[in-house]
Structure formats: C-alpha cells, structure tokens
Length: 352
Image (cartoon, one colour):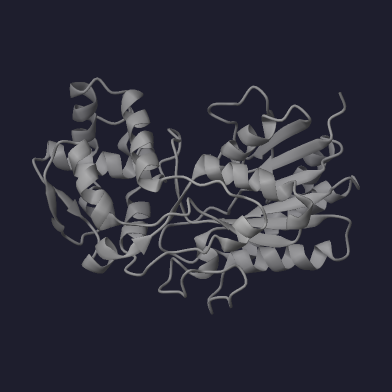
C-alpha cells in the first residue's frame, strides 16, 4: 500500500511532539519521522527518528533532505527558554525557517502545522479578553507566535502548501520524562507538604485561586492537530483546542488534598522555586518509604512552571466555537482527567 502522508514531527521528544507522532502513526497510510536534537528516551516503534539541530542550518538541510518526500510538517518545538520571561521571537522564527527551508526543497510539501498556545492571547502577561477568539486583536507585546504565524501565512501565499495552527491552553498529560508538567508538579508538591506535616496551601494569590481557567488534555490536542492538518477546509486557519469545560482552582484544590488524605490549607502566596529548592533529600526519603522509583525531584516537578501557572489572577478562557463549527467536536472532563493522570503517576510508582 502506498503511503499517502509522510509526516515530519519536529520536537518529537517533547510531550506534544511525542503525542502527535503517536496519533499520526495510528493511521497505516502515514509514514512518521520524528526530529529532535537528542535521542528519545522512550522511542515509539512506529516512528523513525532523526537527530539534528534546527539552529544549524547546513546540517539540518542535509539531514532532512535524506528523508525524501515529506508532505506534512508538524512543528512542536520551541527555543530553550526560562519560566516567567518573554521568549525570544527571533530565535524561535529562525528554527522554523530552517526547518521549512530544508523540507520545502523536495517539492512535495502540502501542509505545515504550527503548535501555538494560550500565550498567543497573552495569558502569561496579564488579563486578556475572554473567551478569547482566534481572530481577535493581538497583545501589544513581543510574541514569537505572531512572528511564526505571519511567516507561514506570507510564505504559503507563494507556495503550493497550506498551514494551520493549534492553540491549547495549559496542558495536562502523563509524561514521566517531562518535569514541566502540571499534574506531576502538583502531585510532588502535595506529597512534600504532607511529608512535612503541612496542609495543602495554595501557593498563589487569592485572585488566582478563584479565577476561571481551562486546560487541554494532551491526547485531545493530538487528535485535534491530526484533524485540522488533514481536513481541507481547515487550511490557513488557527484553532483553539481545549477540553471545552472550565474550572476554578478553588474547586480542584480540596479534591487534590483529599487524594493525598491531607487537610486543605489556606491561600498562602509563595514562590515554590524558592520554598521547594532544597527538598531533594526529603523527596528521596519519600521515594524509599513509599517504594517509589528513585527519580530526582527536578525530573518530576518544575517549580518555576507552577509559579507561573498558579499566580495568574485573571481568567483564562479560550472560545471553542470555531473549532466546533469547522467539525471537531471532541472534548474532555478536566478535573476527572487530572486525577486519572495523577493516578497513573502513582500506579507507576513515581509519586506517593
């Protein structure tokens, strides 16, 4: 059988890239290549992997040329960045440009998908109009998402390929190799608080505790990306992809405390990157006592990421109407999914 879809997933060792590669590979008419700087820690048997550095224009051009006739690019990568800082638009654009320049030479490219996120609307810098719609005015701040989308839009007008973009909000997922992870980071925080004899305090401000937020389950995002990249009328559009429901931390927090059989605390603003900085020895003690896998704390929890997520005092709501209207009706229950993922971490002896 002839393969009709040859996908190149850039950033395949990240949580999104791995999920997209897995989703695409479920269709036997697709060939899936995964591209990354480093080898995958848990390679998928149905994916062929290529190591190259997109910042090295000459090397990535040579490496990608060897793949042959790529029809679809899935750009799931980002330049290395720190939490709570604006990411570099120029470097992020350079990586995408080098990838596209290297792939386009074959003349077979049909579609480029770009993974964006809630940062397109400025969720990381302050209040924004909600529910956020795909066509609303941009935030007046440097944003690599804008540069990359404008680049694809302008270039596609002179080419024979189309583009699409997905905009999830905060992701929830089981990814043991990814510490920048809401579920595992919160699970580690709760476990450490319990071990110290503390209640489960909410480490952000009261406004954040009571604000409305949305998340996106990773497998839902992967299904949405597959849909929009392979559906003709989705060409040259961006789509919000969320679980479609909303919740408040004040609703989830008592349930998280109950999951660890510990009391709910108070709203107690603090920087976890400082408070939890020296908890490695306590974590290793927990690992021994609970027969957990001996995993370093910084492989399970990213405190800077939690600080950035739990200090947002504004609502985070993305409108899902366009996605529904164009034909994608999938959804998920955010709180239920959160605890199912937490149970998976505990079942796999990663969190007590």
